[in-house]
Image (cartoon, rainbow, N blue to C red):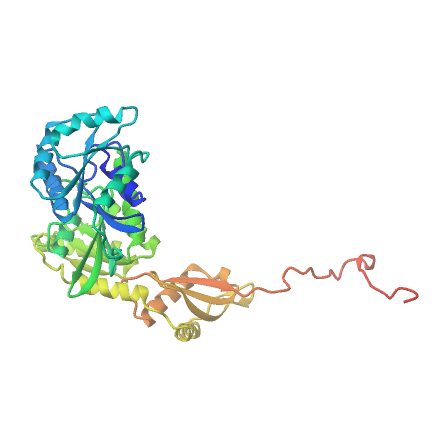
Length: 449
């Protein structure tokens, strides 16, 4: 049909996944566009056929909810498929909805626009606008008409992501979308008992106790050998991009399955991105005590490398423990973004060196002089000294742990980087004392000077 392609065209982004795959967009997705100096919000939907069953019914409900939220509806039909029974069903719904509707006949390449338009007038929606979203043909004319019909609005920037951005990540079917709905208090994303329901990342803004948040519901990430569809590969990219874009990543794991290798791969991606981290063990309710103890032992054994992160045992379906996530989210965000004082960082460094000096290298002691902040989310601490490239990994870990403790950081990794003082004379060649005298150049005054 080309709805996601049109979404990308209007927002001038690639935020919606586009591939030759029917039914790709399942949740409604929001994007910001700008035309002739005016801003607008675009909602991409999963589409309606009028004959939805199973998960398609949930997708249709998302589309109908998007229609209710919108001021203007772009009703897209396929020029190549012609008028279908589903088109009539949608047209009937739109005629009674009271919304301004523009009928867009997409994919007109190689076709006569007038001939294409004539067959869709029987839908009774009004003027037909022929376009090819892929190449932008007819889109400008469509937008000119849309904005001519719109009343002048006050210049007000459309809200971008506000507050703490939280990426909900995890394997398929661990309950990510259920957790999102529980945190939002509404059925905002499709929840259906089928692995891989969410194929794209959905950004949702909301407030809790007057605090703004942006939650990112991501597609489930499967083992690489199980990724056979192009769409799945796009979804993995979207998940990794969401992690990179977030302030805090909430890793959701299935408590009934314990810790599996793919959970560890995701953890590695989060840590590589330097994002603050909260771990949620979902489906905790109903497990036997013996299995709960087994899971806790596995966490202690396999997640020792993320001892800085808080772990919660929750039930997204029933809401148990979900509210407690926010305290860890706030703590992790604060630790990841607070400003760090140069004087305090240097004091911590001096105390750490006094307690445990760096090792010797080539008979010389590695010296660390002072430290300052180099970035946030994650916190980056830059230490200046000499021979810093020779500092062994175990001493770097010692400094990271020392700073994490001194700064009371919780829920975020910390990165320590080094810079060595440069010798301004390092490039100047020293004379070789053993060289023959004839090779040495001695300058003497010229005669007659």
